[in-house]
Image 1 (cartoon, one colour):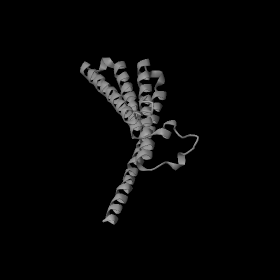
Image 2 (cartoon, rainbow, N blue to C red; image 1 turned 180 degrees about the horizontal axis):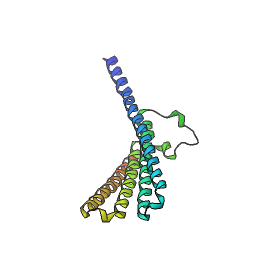
Image 3 (spheres, rainbow, N blue to C red; image 1 turned 90 degrees about the vertical axis):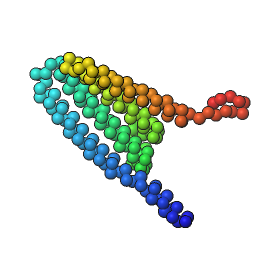
Image 4 (tube, rainbow, N blue to C red; image 1 turned 30 degrees about the vertical axis):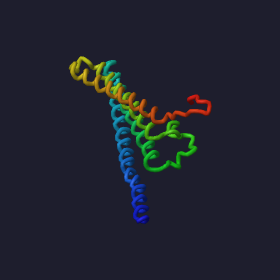
Length: 177
């Protein structure tokens, strides 16, 4: 029976590697975003003289949006792999190691992802406000509601993570530390 339990535990522990292909797929998606960025940048440069200031601003916001989504992908790929699959030995003490990676865990990763989603949502909302005359009030209202839902969700996740990571210690003198 003990052998069966050990084999089952080994299988369960090994199963984390089933996530590795998912991270490889996200790397491919990152490549698609690099391609998309190149297309949008080329479009902006080629038509720069014919675009209005508003069109240039919307195009630049589109580029920022692509970069923010790419940043989100990097956080998920690196942070998720490091947290759920295996340590990244290649980045240990590497001068280019992202600062956030040294203290990443599932809670930190969730809060960082929520913050990135809020930023992406804010860019979309800003694009909508700039282009408000072409949108219905109902569509704008729903975008604001969705954005505020992201904000409130991120606050709740950060608060929950803080509660879970803060431990209450009472010293010999009875003081709380």
